[in-house]
Image 1 (cartoon, rainbow, N blue to C red):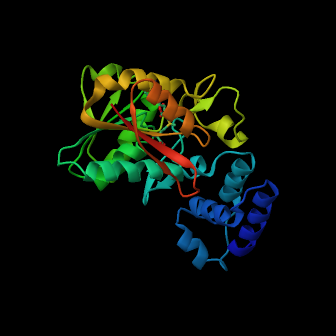
Image 2: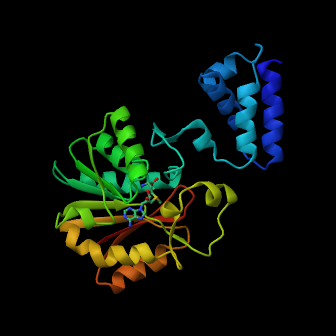
Length: 274
Ligand SMILES: C[S@@+](CC[C@H](N)C(=O)[O-])C[C@H]1O[C@@H](n2cnc3c(N)ncnc32)[C@H](O)[C@@H]1O
């Protein structure tokens, strides 16, 4: 069988499963099975293709496993991050958090201290360390497996990030930061998520409690002890949460600074100060 005909069959199978980018995914899975990149797939379509390994990947994808876990990586802010089932797959909307954080860091003198709270794959902390080399970046997560993944990404991408296992701020003593950026768990326990997310991504990265705002409540109460003078807390929020999160913080004595929408126009990052 040529690679071209395998790709046509694979695209058809993935479209029947309701996968939107079936052609692209088939190409990426063929590339992964062959140990090459997508450019190789596009330039070798007439060659004979040994389909056994690739068929196994299509089976996994058809059964609902996320593409990023099968490939073992996801692109975020122009870099590839290793991912596995112990970490949330980086989302494009989280690039809005990066843009807000870069704006903040750029407006401050060198040596700005930054905390990424709930780092997962490390995509936020590592991107900030690489985009803002004068910043001093710390990242924490409650999950040891996530920290292993973040550490591996930091070494491979050459980012200097201090990584600590911590339940929220617990391991940080009385340390204060100029900027705290977080994409916390913000899904309510009764919210219905796509099967691909609910069945495969780590619950600890998704769910915060019954309402979905529990982690923000904890941040509103605990962050004042960890922000320096003039410090900012930047939070990613779920697609219907911005107003509720703003109100929660204002009622707890915080000042709302800015809410930034993502590329889809959804209010995505809420920035607050004391
Ligand atoms: C939504 S994920 C974000 C991961 C990554 N920052 C990103 O944007 O892709 C939330 C992360 O917070 C971590 N987390 C959950 N509860 C935590 C807690 N109490 N303290 C520290 N980290 C926590 C999870 O393990 C997970 O890695």
